[in-house]
Each structure stands twice: as C-alpha cells, then as structure tokens.
Image (cartoon, rainbow, N blue to C red):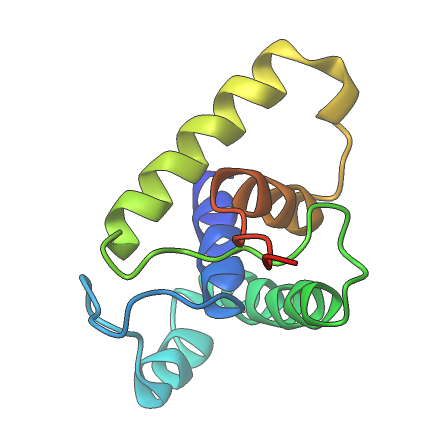
Length: 124
C-alpha cells in the first residue's frame, strides 16, 4: 500500500510544474521494462497505473475541471519537500476525516497539491 501511495504522489508530480532539477534518480524506460519482466511485476503495474492516473488528473487540472485547480509548486521547493508534505497531509487528512477516506487517491492527491501549492491569482 505504501508503494501505491508513493507512486500516486509521483504521478501527480509528473502532472505539475516542479523544479527542473531532480532530487532523486528518475526511473528509466529499460528499468521499468526490467521490473515488468522480473520479480517486481506488481511494482511495474502500480507504476504504470499511477502514471496513467497522473496524466488524467493533470489533464483535468489543465482544463480547469479539478476541484482544487492547478497546483503551482515554487521552483525553490524540492521534489523531496513536495513528496514529504503531500504524504504527511494525506496521512493526516485521511486519518482524521472520514469524509475523504473513500476518495479516489489520484484525485485526492491532486486536491492536496492544489491546496498546498495554489497558483497565484491574476491581478485585475
């Protein structure tokens, strides 16, 4: 379950503007292929599923269909900081609020990202 949560976070991060510098090793296509053919097949399935959900959530955000809107992560915030903050909020909110326990995970993570890193409103 922890792997699924982390993969969902990664998928949402793929759909947002996060600083161009990567804090961690990016999974390469050949590494994913090896996972899919080897003992890590379940991790492969979770990764692919998470990326596909992330793309769908990202498109909803870009089209303005997401409840929380599109997140804007400042370039000064690292990927590690984003992951830690979102995971912390995920655990806190779902642990204390029955309202969100059955929410689809990818949409919920998108909502957390949008509320934690809202885009600045345009001045009129």
